[in-house]
Image 1 (cartoon, rainbow, N blue to C red):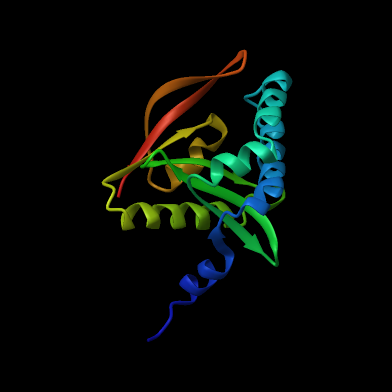
Image 2: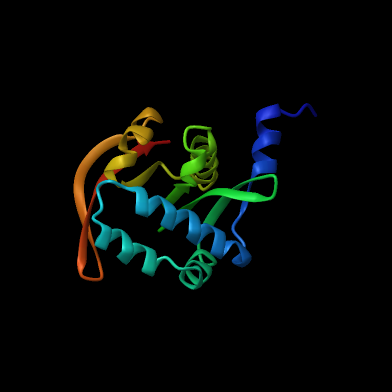
Length: 161
């Protein structure tokens, strides 16, 4: 059987989340949140406090979460949560624009197709909307989520698989 080179690379770079990944994943998420221009410093600090390694260890162990790993270093993560929702797609800001996010997104979409899901949805913060549009997602309506004393805006997006 001939192997597709891209499939081989994906298999070596994408793997399921393990509890011991929680600290690095928390670091990546928090690094991203601190650089999101749509958040105030107080909002970002609220998210950093929430998404600590203990929280991720508990929550991500219950869901389908993948990490992007290169040379034994986790560069990004993303999950297929709540049946058909991609959530928590974060790439270390030092590696933005290098294909890590696209590779993770495609792996999550592949899992969704394997589950025979007709569509996939994303609650995207506004800084990532252009990334999802580039990958075939369509804008829907704005939504809001409460985290502690803060309300965060996002854009609902979806893609037919």
